[in-house]
Length: 148
Image (cartoon, rainbow, N blue to C red):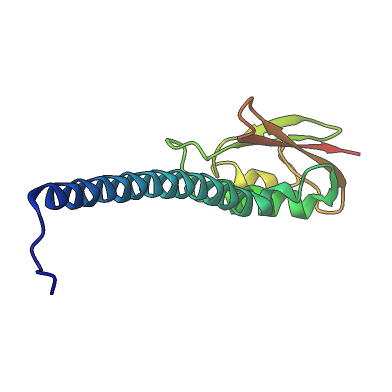
């Protein structure tokens, strides 16, 4: 009969194989974690871009689009109406009519836009061509409306 004794050299070989296998598994684990981190970072960047696109989609509807003066007034009211004279909105709205050219940075002039005796008056039935203004990073900094 064979005895169940393992020699010391065999024990050392088994221990070395176990250590080598453990090192390989730990190395693979670190590589998988690094790959998961890169995928996660990429996903975060893509979600941020998607968020910005969705956020700006309501504004982008004015780009190269013909709108009525009432839409221009509503745009100014919606995006700049909550800002006081000491505040500045997230972007500017420039309106060029046949009589004047004005730039709005907050909601201070909303009453003048609706007052037909004022130079800032925007006639609701006039047609305007909208154009987005963006900086070098494609961040929307303004909207320009020109009367047709």
